[in-house]
Image (cartoon, rainbow, N blue to C red):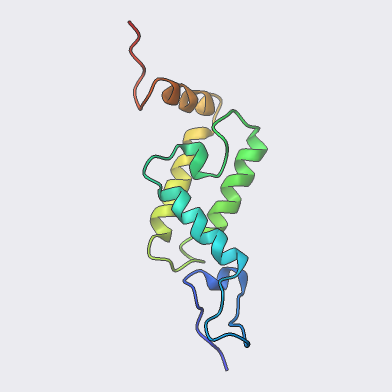
Length: 122
């Protein structure tokens, strides 16, 4: 018999219900998907933190790897979590903001200036 997934993103990992317990525990991929969604939608997050990266310049390959890993977990075609689409959009925006020759530096400058605009120094 086929059992419905116990978690909206259960099929991402191909998780199945445990036969020994009354309620199956989420798989590590389910937990990772939930964490990626929370991280992407956090109120006071930075583009770096949305992708699970430290707020520091990183190599392009590391940036792409972080984006790809998170995007695969929360992609709306793979994850039926109610906020998967919004989380995926936030991840894409974060990746776009950090990509390009000056993206990371620009975002770090915003943070050091305390917000979105260019800092006013007097």
